[in-house]
Image 1 (cartoon, rainbow, N blue to C red):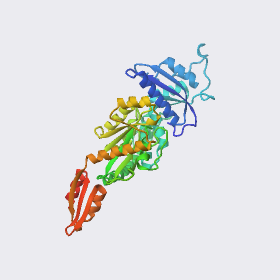
Image 2 (cartoon, rainbow, N blue to C red):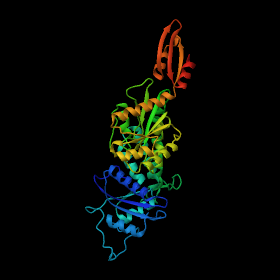
Image 3 (cartoon, rainbow, N blue to C red):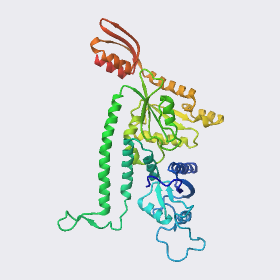
Image 4 (cartoon, helix red, strand yellow):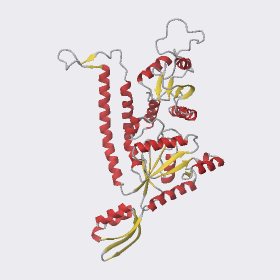
Length: 441
């Protein structure tokens, strides 16, 4: 799995349409793989597709499609060694793999086994990456914080562990012989043990960072939080910038944001509302990545409100909504309150906007580039938190004046007066905040 594929290297997409997958869904999946390839700097120059009841056990596709793939890449098109003698007349011998203009990598729109990958490489003569490997490579390139780099590295090593190949000397025993501790380990066993040890080290380091992140979330326990969630490249970071005025990274690329950012809604409210930007989701997101990024996704799970951002200009957005819902259910956020944002309305024609408004009456059809739309969403967020608030009156003795500061931070103070008994506060806040302040009196 390359960390930095060659600039503008050429790639061929390989996809199998399985039973139950519609033609539009299959086309959408291949288009998404092409976007992933472009994010890695690859130029897609061909596609090989086939309808099958299941992936071919040997090399994903059948022999005929394998030969077609070989002609594109310059490979033999055969899993085994190319037999001696000339190729059949109807199939002229292909150019050498790696020749100018030839694709240098095959991207498979499925997760495949190590043996399938090896057989495809024998048949094509070029590198083969499955969908998980492509996504991991993008994550590796875009990870900026220490936490994100650790999360991606753990997922990458977990992906590589079962794919280690037996080297020519792999059956040699290490550490055996007279005075040794038993028969020893083969080279492949030793490599796998090193990987396991490295993953354990990385997980221990990540756990320490996650504890700090958990502490920060607990300190924000009384504050109102909303999390931006959704498919990758739906526009979450654009909304983060529009709602908070922060300078978060915004790019028209898949998985441009891997690090969770938390900022206050602007103009600031009383109490403050915190907005968090989270990592995007995608179809067939590798399970190891979901597991590694679980602490990052906790921002979504523990938020009071989810702002589900959808790219309404993408014809496949209904399927992307379902992908997001599945991932949210997986992390325990299926029942969290949410507002559905059909984003990028500025890219839609008037007729399309009318149709979407009728089909999705509970959604907001907006654009992060329109100040009026930003103001509308801000009012919706404020209205959501306002519904959960109650009014209360508290008398805070002068010996407990620290509670006055806490009340201003966690509640909206409607009035504040002073007399001989202490500070009288009339405030509006969530019930749990009022209960906590009263219990401290």
